[in-house]
Amino acid sequence: MIGKSLVQGVRARVREPRRRLGRVGRFYRLIIALNVLFAWLLLTLFSGYKPSLALHDIRKCAIDNLRDDLSFLDAAKPIRTDEFLERRERLARALVASNADAFILEPGYTSQYYGNISQTDWEPWEPEERPFLMLVLPEVSESGDVLAKTAFLAPHFEEGRVRMLGIPSREELDIVTWEEHWDPYTTLRRSHIFANFHSPEKRRPPKLVVDEEMRDFISRGLANAGFETVGLTPEVELVRQIKSPAEVEILRAVNTGTVAAVRAMRPCLVAGLTENEVRDILDEVLISIGFDMFFNIVLFEENGALPHGGFIVGTKKATEDTMIVIDVGAHYLGYSSDICRSFFIDPAQRDVANPFLGWLRLPDSTPGRLSSRNARDVAHLGLREEKLKVWGVVLEAQSAAAVALKPNNTAAHVDLAARSVIEEAGYGERFTHRLGHGIGIKGTPYSIEPVLTQLT
Ligand SMILES: *[C@@H]1O[C@H](CO)[C@@H](O)[C@H](O)[C@H]1NC(C)=O
Ligand SMILES: *[C@@H]1O[C@H](CO)[C@@H](O)[C@H](O)[C@H]1NC(C)=O
Image: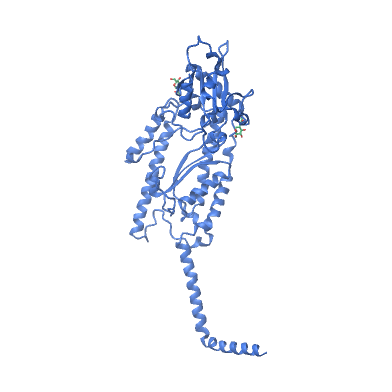
């Protein structure tokens, strides 16, 4: 009881001064509340919308956009066993034309092409010191037909693992095995694979075309064991350069899909995102449709002047005047994409990222809105127009290259068509990256000087 009356007494005393403050107090509180609201609005408007909060939505927006139409994947089917065998048949004919007795290769890009085994299928960690080699040998029948014989050299204790790789083949794999205390190359030279060369009257050593990815110690080991080793011949190189219809469809799908991913993401991007954030979003968009990442370079503004970035840490933030450059590649069914796009983000898309603030938007920087802008804005606008001009020059160069891309033109014709547009526009010195390059399993085969390749 005593406690209760004490509390009531205190309350009564507190109520007194409040009453005296009256309307004036409520007025001050209203002012403070309005100030807080105003400060919040200003902060939200000028602090770049805190993209970290919206990252999830941006990613979802981009993935949903891309998933709207995945028809570019429809025609791409995995390479079938028959096609792997046919590649080895074409290789066998190229070997006959090159006067060679066999083609020899290690797990890598080339073995992916001929045997559906990549280096990481065989050794996920790193290429190891024990040679595991694939050989393709031409067998010429009496009627003159050339067939391909496929054989392997493997450490004895790895034989079972080789058989488990599922290398496409009509019959059981022919594997020459070597024990740990033997010389693998001499084992191969004396094996049944080269029985034709065992008799003394056959003085000529077997001639091997060695794949470009073969490690040097293996090449030297083969030469020391009595093989003649030569590099790729033009005929052998041509086998992989001419793409089959199935390869063309996969390449079309993965490259179209990569462009579609960038296009799907673009309207979802907002000012304030960093290069790394845009890169991570794009990675996830590509992975969401079953692609694997190959590389992804996102550069803003002057960072994009170096094609591969250089010393860029990825923390530059986008504004609506940022020229975004994206050079990205993915893998799908064993084939690569490699595309490059540059663009501004779309100012109208602010509303999507922050629906509450759409009605409060600042005037955007489209040309023609000069009236209320100060000198700094005018300079900005000039820069934006310069960026658009350069973008237009690149589009014109690209279009000229596309026109030159026709049968019997060389890659040099195509490069020159683009180069002359850029030189005429006065940016010749800035054209530091050649026009383009071939693409296939590997992103950028350099096996033939690109400007000398005959287009087919
Ligand atoms: C080639 O390898 C891939 C992945 O390892 C596999 O999914 C595919 O079935 C193989 N293709 C053939 C024809 O064996
Ligand atoms: C390309 O050149 C070859 C051989 O010179 C010729 O037979 C062929 O008709 C040419 N193709 C075109 C489209 O001009």
